[in-house]
Length: 407
Image 1 (cartoon, rainbow, N blue to C red):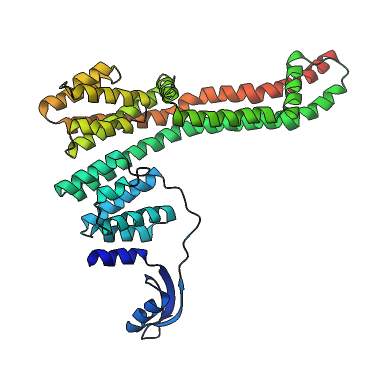
Image 2: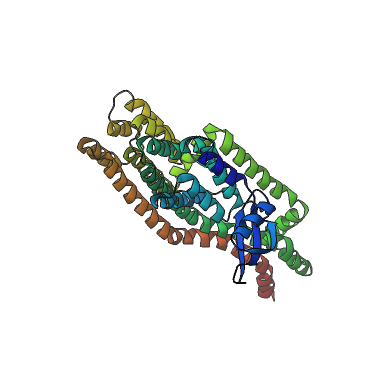
């Protein structure tokens, strides 16, 4: 009976109403009901005289569900259940208070599945786009052991830490990318609109232009007549890159391997991948998930094909009885410090603590790299700006200097 009531409540529309209570004080509210008449009757029994009532419209401007939304949802649900609020009621409260309609729909779908008899992990498993294998496995382990609140706490902490690392990496990448894009835009504007004005001035000189200036003028004329070609190439290259990234395993392997060897960002990519590996494996180990099963989730969480393949190789070796640290050594991917900490954890029976220490250390390393990356990239960025923008300015003033020296 309770399940049926919960199911019905979740399906009911929401109404906004305004009226006066027994004391004549104007009040407003928002409630769910099968229809407006039933809600009016309920409010009348409470002594409220309704002035108007209307159904609340659902927003059509749905936002995309971001990983940060899932992390925040995990923390909210943990707090609710720690307070003793039942699961379905917790989901209902979180849904009604969420600003993202897409997230509301997702949470309501979970609540409906649970109300119809599904367990929480089974409901999560129906939405693999938002809840990965690690999330589902940890929740399932918590339900089986009767420690769902503890597992949700671990999931929330894990999600927050991994999203924090991702945000810092994006921050490190964004600054140089935006500067380069701005430089390209400024250069394009100068070639399309500024250089032609100088060209008209140069034509009155009656003398040959310097080679560098003539090259820039020719480039400007070419861009004015065939501007669609570089634009089309950029679009085609972007689409091709996106498709290759989604469909080609060889391309992903090549790109991820290239990123790991990049002069500035390679160190950041390596440390963040190791941090995710250690944090995920520590979380799975603390949750009582067997090592072999854990490594599938760990492989997908590393965020790099090279580390993913290394983790799958570790899984294959450990399934044959090889110790974890020995299997990690064989991959020749993980730093010696990580291997030694793993060895100490295996031998002392404190693998979870050791892996958490590794994750904390490498997360701090990522923080330091992000903080210093701007200063490391600044000379390169200034060089790019100097070559692009400064070069165009010099090219335009060379004929003026030449004319001044002739006079």
